[in-house]
Length: 282
Image (tube, rainbow, N blue to C red; front, top):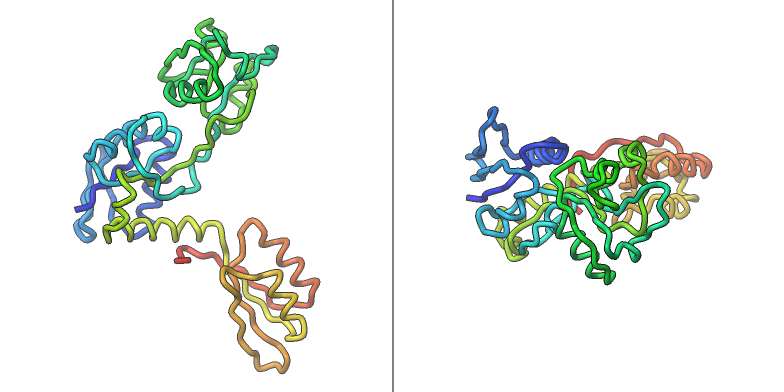
């Protein structure tokens, strides 16, 4: 049986559970239940605090799990990152009062408040700075106002919370985080059930970034059109009943789709259609 750890709260929990279900697994826990069983796929899901998932995986209690890269690295346990999941994206950075001119290399002797003490400890060591780390479980942004710290190190999404607290980001990001699939060892990819899980999730992640574009174009401009829509390996080309016309089908980056359609239309393509992709294998 494969044991998979999932976050039990927060945005990682919602998006992680949705991804698992989209991958075809039967994961429907009842209220307050700590586990759920998918008998068809011989899987047990265990719901844990996102911060604890890497610890359970590192200790061999569960096989694989979904958590944040920042949380996994802060746990300082052995694990292997199998796949970035493209949700829960955030940046872990230092912040100081807006009136301060401090930069990270000048943090020596300061008090740094954070919920990620190991990430901060390792970063300070890397830049050769000695500072006092003040560990807090939450509300890190107010620690400077309350006189608990001089600097904070925290997850930054929009930056709105920092701005409201009178803080600004300084220095390069300590870490760029997202939801990730981890295992206690990369060797687990040799197991069929882990490989299938990985491939299913990867297929959904890739599909979320691509769409399928189809269009008709004169054979005379096919080379130019294919240069605009090269696809993953190459586009699919089919002859049409109309002489000297062909149909083209190719996967394209979702974020580029409107610009590509504009270019194809200007080139002379017609019948340009875009459809969503739910899952794929590349």
